[in-house]
Figure 1: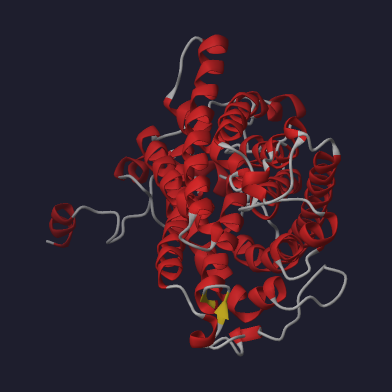
Figure 2: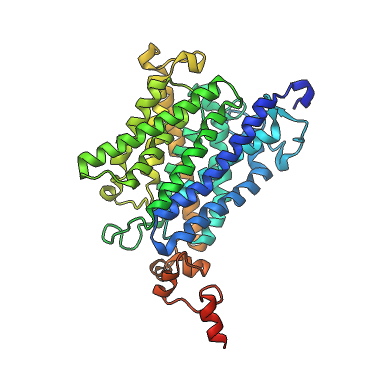
Length: 437
C-alpha cells in the first residue's frame, strides 16, 4: 500500500465513506426490526438475535481472514485472494485504498458481509437452532460470501475483469447470494409446523415499517457509498436508489390493489425493499429512467414471486427468496438492458445500442453465482444438520424459540401465555416484592 501523504487521501471522500459505513452497519439492526416484526410473538427475540449475532461473528471472521481472501492480491484465476493480510497484517493507518484509508475501505466492505449473512436468517425463521446458526454464519461467510466478493470486486476477480459483468453495489455477492443460500437452507430444514395450514401473520407491522425505513436510510450508504468518493457518481447512485425504492413500493401496492383489493403496509414495506434490492447492482450503471423502470419491475414481479413458495412447497418464512433472490436477478440482468455510457464509462445496454452482449454476461454471472451459493450452502447446511442438528425440536418450535432458547419473551403476555417459570426477569417488581414478603 501507499503512504497516506503520497497517495493524497481525499478528506471529503474519507468523510463520506465513514458516514456510509455507519449507514450500512445500521441496516443490520434495521433488518432485525424488519424481520422481528414479521414473525409471531413467540420468536421475535430470536430473529433479533440472529441478526445482531451476525455482526459479531462476521466481524471476527472478516478481520481474521475474510478481507484478505476477498480483497487481497489474486491467488490465480480470479477465484480467491491470498492470506497476505490475514489478521489485517500490513494494513495500518498509513495504508491507502484509492483515496481513502485501507482500514476504512475494509470496514465498509465488512458491513456488506454482515448484512448478507443476516439476510439468510429470514428464510429459516421460527425453526432454526441458534447454536447451529452460530456455527453456520462464519463458515458460510468464508466459503460463500468471501469468494463471490472476490469474483465481483477483488483484484483480477473473474466476473468483473474477465467476464465483464457489472455489479456496482452487490446484486451478486449480497442479494443473489443471500437469496440462493436462503432457498438452500429452506430445503435443508423443511417447512415450519403448520405451514400452509396455520395463519402466520406478522405480529407487529409498525415494527416492520420502522425496520424498512431504517433499511431504506442505510441503503443510501450501501449504494452511494460504493462510489468510494464524494462525487457525481455517488450522487447519481443516491438518486437512483431513492427512485427505485419509490417505484418498487408503488408497483407492489398496485398489484395488491388489483389482485386483493387492499394495499397493505406490509406490501408497502416489501415493495420498497424489492425496489432497493433491484437497484443495488445497477445504481451506478443506469440513468434515472432506468432506475424507475427497474424498481417498478421488481415491485411488480416480487409481489407475485413471494407466493411461489406455496405452490412449490418451500417455506421461505420471510420472503428472502421472493424479494432478494428474484429482485437481485432482475436488477443484475437489467443492467444489460438499461446501462448507459455516461454512468459506466463505456458499456451500453440493449436499449442504448449495446446489443445482447452485456445481457449475456450478466446472465452468466447470475447463473454461476446463484448455483454456487445454493450448492455450497446446501452442503454446509446438510453437514451441520448431521453433526449437531440444524432444526429446533418440535416442542421448542411449538412453544417458541424466545422462551425455549433465550429464556426471554418480547412481551409480558407472551410469558403468561406460555406458562413460563417465575424468575426475576418475568415477575413485575411489585409482585416480586409481594412474593418475597
